[in-house]
Image 1 (cartoon, rainbow, N blue to C red):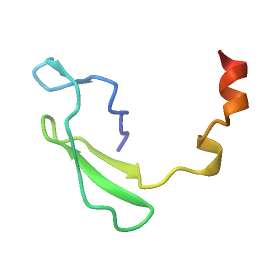
Image 2: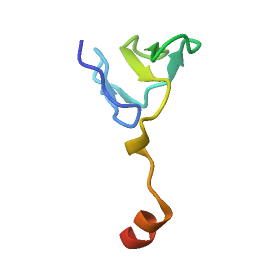
Image 3: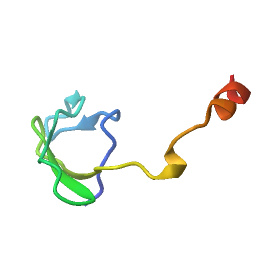
Length: 64
């Protein structure tokens, strides 16, 4: 099943678009399953970030 990110709207069977309302299970391992309260779409969320997911202060300054 292809999951969308929470920021992307989904098209339901009625053609109506919505922002996902993720119901995420309690963290118990590297990922937690979630279901959209509105449309029932399923997705996995990471429970932690890798070191590469963070920017240093120097990287922030150079990006500005």
